[in-house]
Length: 153
Image 1 (cartoon, one colour):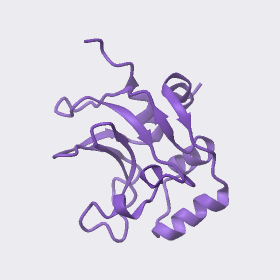
Image 2 (cartoon, one colour):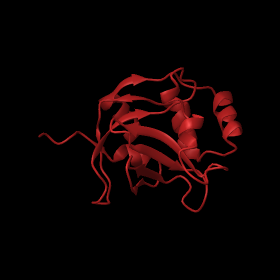
Image 3 (cartoon, helix red, strand yellow):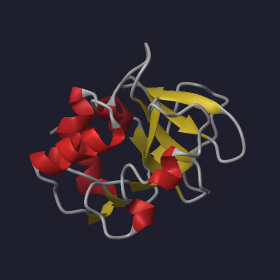
């Protein structure tokens, strides 16, 4: 079982409908970006959903510990959960053409962000709502492998 399958079985409380290949291609066209292969495959197999706040663990000790709340998906009616929502992509200066794509969030408003261009293409970052950036994973599988049950207390 992959780390993504495990995370969805363990912590997903709501799963989004799976997109078609055509919907993924239309998103890439609309965003003028080619998504990393592993992330594209994730969308086709899992898409997105709501999670029961598994803790996101970073190797960077300065990264705040937060729980994963939502992974954005394609074809979602609720704009707050729609991947590629213009309001989310325009949060970042110099993000046209798209350099980073918000792909999820915590209940605190922190973002999970995918690098779509530059030398760190495919790397996933934690963007704190009120501050810094922290590298989380080299790809989507590694990101889901970093999730843990929250520590009690």
